[in-house]
Length: 244
Image (cartoon, rainbow, N blue to C red; front, top):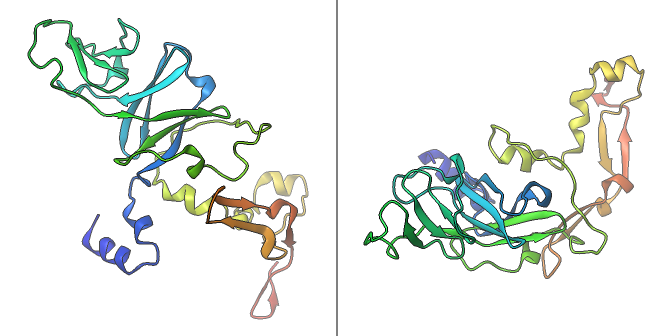
């Protein structure tokens, strides 16, 4: 981070947010939808700047660094599993335990002295409500309930959707996710003019109950009640003059 950015982080009300260039460490983060990882399959995801290899063994998800300690190549370029619970590097056969990341064998050099002396990071993984979560950080993982929205563990909750890789800073999503005035940018869309839709400038909360912040205890998070508690803005003024 440049010196001026570091300085602004110190002066800001949210210094931790500004310092987290790659995202917040020591938290659970969603990595994949459950249906994207079949038994015995491998998938590589990039999280907080780290490439992580996911696989499923006996229905349990395992997560390990997607980089061999030998020459640094990605396992995911040609994932190999010769024995359940391990992953082998396609380059020289270095084989690691998915449970603890320790080097258990070297296929091309069975008596290598590095066996048992080398390891790569592993990550806690948990699967709930159709999502696979990975804890990325250097602390002991807390309960997943500490990092999911209110109501997430309700019996009728299940997550559906799509997953995309976007070439952008992660903060763009965070800072724009709850912005209900984004409707303004669509005012000139052909879909709006062609269908003669009455599109408001935006939506504003009808009262302070539009957002519920749960900061203490569990569940933690933000509940967006705006859909049931808002009013559209169809008229706007600049210096007392209507905007057309």
